[in-house]
Image 1 (tube, rainbow, N blue to C red):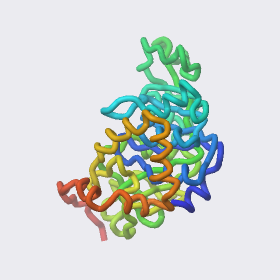
Image 2 (image 1 turned 120 degrees about the vertical axis):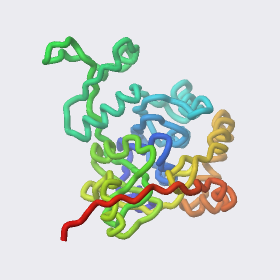
Image 3 (image 1 turned 90 degrees about the vertical axis):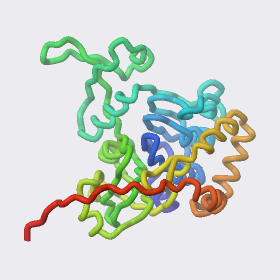
Length: 298
C-alpha cells in the first residue's frame, strides 16, 4: 500500500475510494493520510467515516458526494467542522443524489458527455448545484436533467480476491466498484487475498474488474475495517458508534489520528493494535453458494 499510494496518488488528484457500505478501503485512506497528501478532491456515494477521517487530517479541499452521514448513527462531525468553520481547512462541497453520482460514474466509464436521469424532478439540488442541468429530450418528451461524467485520477477498489494481473472478483453488496474502476485513470485493486489465476478462471462470472484496466494490486487483509467484506469479516458497528463521540471533539479526533494512523507504519501495525480478539468477533460464519457447471468443450 505504501508503494501504491506513493506511485499513484499525487497532491491535487481526484481520488475515489468507493464501496457502498461494504468494501470501503480504510487502509488506502490511512496511507494517504500517513503520506500527508494535500488538496485532494474526494468522490464517494456516501463519504462515511473514511472521508470524515481524511478531511480531519487535512488532505482534502473538495468533496463530491451523495448523502452525508455516519450510517445509522448521525452526522460526520469532522466534515461539518470543515464546511461550517474551515477546520482544519475550508472544504468545498458538490452534492448529488445517489443515482446522480451513479450516473456521473457511468458517464465517465462509458466516455459519455453526460448522463440523463428523471429523479431530479421536484428536487432542490439543481438550485444549489449548477452542474445538474436540463436538456431537451430529442425524442419529444420534454426536458430531462443531466449530470456530467466523473473521471477520477485515482480509484481504490477493495474486493475479496484477484490474481496477480488484477482480474478481480467481488460478491455481496457490490455498489459502483466496477463503474468507478472503468471511469478512473489509475486503478489500485486492494484484496483480502491474491489467488491463482485458475481460481479466477473457474468462476468467471464473479470477475467484475478485468486486469487490463488495473495499475496495481495490493494484498491487504482486513483492509476495509471497520466496514465489511462479504464472507471475510462483518462490519464493526462498535467503531461506527465510537467514532461519533471521538469526532465531535477536535482534540480527541487529532489524538485518534495520531495513535491509529500517524504513529503506525502500516496496516499490519493497525491490526495488531486492534487485537485478534476484536477481529475474531467480526467472523462472518459460513453460508456457501452452490457450485455451477459452466461446461467445457475439449
